[in-house]
Length: 90
Image (tube, rainbow, N blue to C red; front, side, top):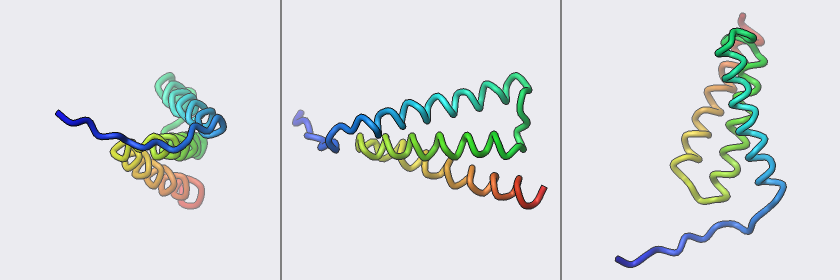
């Protein structure tokens, strides 16, 4: 079986750090929600999810993991809509 060569973008330490930070933010937000420290309708939770989704979208795009990129873009859009809704309509 012939193996395809996938071209990654050159490594960027800032992008990698942002990806790790994004992972930490999403996991922290989920932990805070799970322990009842924050509410699932709060702007803080949706803001954390938005930041995390953007960061993971950046790093998955850089690694050419397009399936994960699309999932994170979708989650980012959902988080943005929920953030707007929680700030302006609740």
